[in-house]
Length: 332
Image (tube, rainbow, N blue to C red; front, side):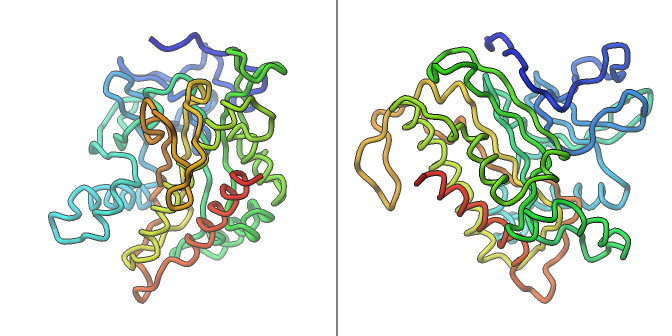
């Protein structure tokens, strides 16, 4: 049974008023943990956001514009068949992407629409902290018009050019008062307007805030936070290993979704002083941190075959920057 929903102290992304709730099929609801992308709009029935099939453990993402939506669907389908068709590089990527359960047609706002059924990465989290980080200096794809290129170049300029990263949105649970071990927590949400204004230092401080690294915790809480950061780092490095070797695709305007359960920061074992391959080990850990920390690649509407079988330097530049930011948090 999930804990009672926490108080909201600052929410930039309010849900639509009750009288303007979208018309949804029975068993589906708006995804409360959506932090970026297109949302439902009370004045525009054609604006469709993410849905949640809680019983089925799925998030449903509406297909975008016809060309982009079909490209993303084909990408997920190619992942599903990779390996069986001999594409081992692509098969290795499956572990870094939400599980795909196929397309589904639903009637939403009195119109039939096609959705991608994807794994709900926060389904079993009591207090899900979620961040969408878009990766790469260049976010326009090879088919983009000159106008689209100019539009994209004008977004998130400071962080994107310096780090190859931008921040469309996040939500995080934070301790309410000075007692950092208090049970009560509040939720902070920020959207793309916040991310667009970030400097490089502002981005780094936001990452510290998201990982609850900007406040002074007890020794036990600091150890749990380090466990969290080490697990995020491990998963990012695994993704980087795949990019270093792959020559199949180039990813534009793709994101990393970082999720962790804040409630687990209050109930984690301390770390011992031993290091194994540069990482400290937990003593008598009740479960692997991979059960409550998840980093996955998302948003594949602008994935193209690798040009001249070259590595995706654009994506790797941003990914390496993010790894450096996490490493700095671990050692701060």
